[in-house]
Image 1: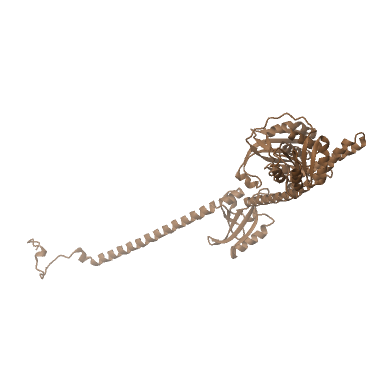
Image 2: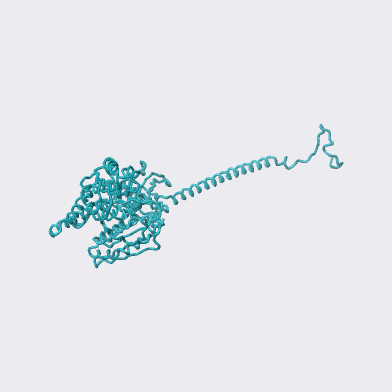
Length: 567
């Protein structure tokens, strides 16, 4: 067919082709099939091997990722973490642990954890570590020792863990320093609040006692003063009366201090520049200090004015200076400093009794003996003193406390035994300017006119009548508000002044004045009170159009005030 060029597909389907040549495949069929099978097996093996390699790589990647996450969590944890053997050897320590001990990883790993624990607790702690390696968690508090001087309180949790086929304990320690500081601060604030409430209660009691004493003292001072005018030639009697008035005046100052502590004194507030007040009383301050005490006065930057009662501010300064002087028996330096400050809400968190806003601080610092920490919370209590009997009343600092609180301020103390103390007074600022000084009025005691005197204490009423009548006044005396209304209705002539007590059983003096005012339009009103925690004083602050005299008031002082109000 090759010779004649006949194609095979032209042959009939039933034709038989003779002498056809054998193909390579037909000749080597077995070898081909064997080779193909071997190649298939090799391909399958390679595929399985590649699959295993891929799986291994994925496992390695997963392991590396897990290791990375573990290492990241381990190193960035806020707590200190040690991986330790049950016997205490440290396998690994995280960055927080290294920072707490101020050591490198290499300097920690391989050492025993007990080297960094409180020696007094080390044995007990290691027993807990050993137990936790097999039976579960253990929790306790101890101290981490960087050195004998640097110690950190820690809260520890020990948990069992298998690491590289070995029993391991995860020793997790949390720094308790900040928590303990916060707890101490919270405790201090609670103690301050309790102390403030205690002082409030004492102040309420002190105010009531002072009121009763003021009524008694007014009678003593008044009649002693009237008696001295009658003891013309009897010098010995005059001396006795003078001693009576002197003793009563001391008692009056004592009750005044009690009222200041209880925040029931009347305040005549005006804008004040503290630097001017300090400068003007500086000669007095120097006179009460010994020669071995250096007085330093500083003003830090521009200082705003405060709205305050000048007399009471002077009392604060004097009391703090005297307290500082007594704290320096061997001499030293006394510094008075003023500055403007802004109290932020964050500062209020540490001074719960202080509101935020602008304040002026008056700081009195001494280099004296200091105040022990265990009595610092008591120093503002009335009659508390560390001085020897007869050396002090124990009312100096309590008076400061009361005056400052009545002005809407706060007083703080920092002290260190053997180094001195600083009293820091915070007073609210004002934008008002200080008033210009006015010329003093000439004293004039005698006068004329009709005065309606109302006081439920008949001794006081009789005293006022006896004192004012000789000075030219006509007196209508009423033992109570209802009697005063009846007297006013019966009296057809003019009543120039209503001189009345504030707190009385039937009605207060303000109500009495309101009842009489419509029928007595030109009548002046003068209030008297042994204490001023009432509606007249408007929480202790007097308006310019209200005259309030606080008992005890001497007859001459009363006469001077009446002469001034009547013109």
